[in-house]
Amino acid sequence: MSKRDYYEILGLERGASPEEVKKAYRRLAKEHHPDFNKDDQEAGKKFNEVKEAYDVLSDPEKKARYDQFGHTADFNGAGGGFEGFGGGFGFGGIDDIFEQFFGGMHSRRRPPGPEQGRHLRYDLDITLEEAFSGGTREIRIPRSETCSDCDGSGAKTGSRPETCTVCGGTGQQQFTRNTAFGRFVNVQVCSSCRGEGRVINDPCPTCSGQGRIVRERTIEVKIPPGIESGTRLRISGGGEAGLRGGPPGDLYVVIAVKKHKKFMREGNDLILEVPVSFSQAALGVEMEIPAIDGNATLRVPEGTQHGAVFKIKGRGMPRLRASGRGDLKARIRLVIPKRLNPRQKELLAEYARLSGEEAGLTDKNFFDRVKDGVKDVKDALGGSH
Image 1 (cartoon, rainbow, N blue to C red):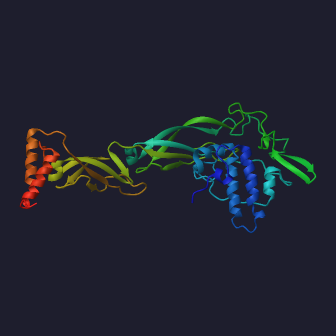
Image 2: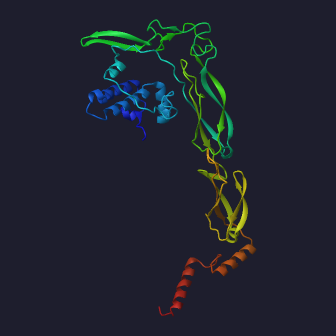
């Protein structure tokens, strides 16, 4: 079953501001939270749906990818590949909502741990011949890689990141506020380390403390015989480097097979239009026709009609990751000559007479032929009418 649009779930238009997204989530999360709807069996499902939409649209990077690719977008490894989030989202008590916006009384989270790198996508155009035979292709892609000088730490050689003294390594700052309703603790991302829980006082000059640098790499892509347009080839670890020691993402190569001048593909079968003259179709003929891997012999029986299809078994495309091949289907196209020499006209006219057909142009116009037809009918009836 297809997912609902995230904007539709939150009741927003595309292009909604972060404040609008946050406001919509606060309202809907409270409305559908299971703690407030104990008798509604669907409340948990609706709450998870709202939370999933908010998790994407409240993150600028995830929102940008969702706006471009929709539910096929990759969200930094969450959900595996291009299929989006995958599994469901759990929910806790009502404190989850207040902790999200006001902070929790007991909130003291750990700093972020290892994070997988982003997956990448590359669209590769290949010819039908390449799809038939398979092989390898080299592609060049820019991607973030772990800085070799600092091994991804972001700190200059000989130094190391230090625990943030502002948040004590938690990545969060707590601000206590006493109100008439009680004591509230507001938890925010640490302004010193930006939630990392550590600071780099002596950054690596190569990556400027980022721990990653962008390089263009040549990657070899193996193309299996029989591949079709839309097939995704996964290259494990071919994506961007992870953060804080996390694994790299994957590279997905999406195949697009170009249109061919002669052949049209239909699954594993190839369709070829074969021009045949009137005499060849009437008398029959044996002829050589092109195939994807050379030539093939086609036997056209006498009396073949325009549009007839003849199958040559095993001369189509290989079956992807299986044995055998599809068929080559020859579709007959009857070719009528635009000009005839006098002798050809004479012979065709003779054929028409022998077949009892009316052929050729006459001097009589349409009304003359109608009059002749009426006269013939009267003669046949004895002139009584």
